[in-house]
Image (tube, rainbow over all chains, first blue to last red; front, side, top):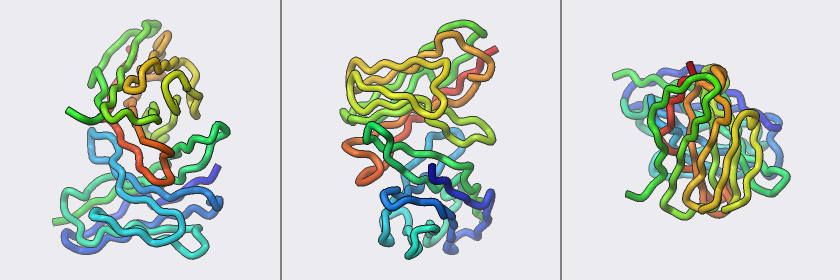
Length: 113
Length: 115
């Protein structure tokens, strides 16, 4: 199964952009790249996902390398509420056709005021 | 209110007891999942269900039983609780084919302690 590698922790200053990297060198052609974040004592929250092209939504942007072996989640202006653990996840197909997430350890983002 | 709810929020049980964690979603999502979260392991899939009456094992299914007689409910039962099952349990749901077009929505979790 394809795995992801993320730094354990990162720091950012408030109102500055944050680039959260993720390596997934064994990704297959049909794996989708998802990002979730988890605030303390809450369930994970969907942030963004993509396959090959860069994606933007109201929360963040996702930049996917041309070879798809890495991706970067971009928070354009970090706020204190963005402090969370960010998970980069690959979704792959199971034998019955359904897809499932495999979570890694994630990156703890600290936002400094 | 619409959403995905888990109950109870906190549970303490004794070793050997049977305990059931409840998960209810109001969107009629086809797919539902149970994950456990432990320090050092991230989230690991226990069971998932693609539709009512269709369930399948995940990464760590031993000691757990699930059922899905109704689309909106996906209870997780620990048949004989052990201390190693002390964890935070998250239920999730997704519509259509999750991953390709949709993200997953998670509940707030159940913190289970087995003493």
